[in-house]
Amino acid sequence: MFGWEFPPHILGGLGTASYGLTRGMSVQKDLDITFVIPKPYGDEDQSFLKIIGACNVPVVWKENSWDYVNGRIGNIMHPDEYFWYRDHIRYDFRRIWTNDLGCIEFSGRYPDNLVQEIGNYEAVAGVLAHSLQFDVIHSHDWLTYPAGIFAKQISGKPLVIHVHATDFDRSRGNVNPTVYEIEKRGMDNADHIICVSNLTRNTVIEKYHQNPDKVSTVHNAVDPLPDADKFVKEPRKEKLVTFLGRITMQKGPEYFVSAAKSVLQRTKNVRFVMAGSGDKMNEMIDLVAQMGIADRFHFPGFLKGKEVHQMLADSDVYIMPSVSEPFGISPLEAMQVGTPSIISKQSGCAEILTHAIKTDYWDIDAMADAIYAIVEYPAIHETLSTEGRNEVNQITWDKAGYKVRAIYNRVTGQY
Image (cartoon, rainbow, N blue to C red):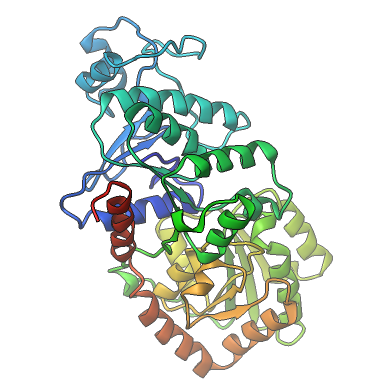
């Protein structure tokens, strides 16, 4: 598998989904997963897979001693593994800047030179494809499609790409031609395409002109939360309504703010939280001030790990008003800790959730009505809380993993 993020160092839902799926697949005892990311930190959970950092794979031969390599990267990669990769360099990558080990340094994030990093990651894939034994190549999201294609060209092994989002989702239709070309090339070269929702599947078929027969939906899921009962609401008089995610155009934060104003015209017993970061954060802070509701609004910034679950558990309502959401794991996480969720009909998770309230992202009145009903009527809150938790606890990654395995069997001819 080629990925871009892996917990605990994540910047969004891609890392969460990659972790959940691979952990869910690990129950299949005859399956060995090697997961490549640009830059590991050494504290990733490798109990159920092997992680390779692209930043530690040499692409240019440089003379180094075993002790030197051990001192440089021994805490993350065994020196013998480094030398094995060095012995399998087959191409001249000297045009790319490399460090003293002949390795490319990656940011592990989404820098301004992202397209260059994607190309560098592809070079690493060439070395790995010559070095490793594998049956299937699985590329997560557009950043890793070139690497997957290169590995397929070298090995002749089937390529499965996993579409977690398309640029149509991220840009509200104002598609970046460079990104579109990378996405389209990945889909054209894939033996099979996995989409996280039927919404995304339809986009792949219609906008990228793919044969429906090679495009499948495998909905995302959530990891079981064994300590869910530990996350309890702090006692307080006021109700809490939370938006948690990237504060970007795709997520519809302005609709959340507008709905908040509408709710506050009916009751003052509510506070609103917009947790996360993004390019529209300052704009949202200004909008809240313009609407005169700044005293009822909080911006705690980016949350991770247990902070996320505690924030969701403290909330009386979770809302995801996304304009275009390929799936959306956060409502499932909210429901795990008993928090009722309101989601946009334009989200993939709306396809599988029954006990969540669904509105159009642009329907401020419907959104406000739903928030008001949940915070004012305890019976509605209790029903959505109990039924939602029961429902989401059945949506597990191991089930998604078996669907992915069936696709592997199909592309390798092992029906």
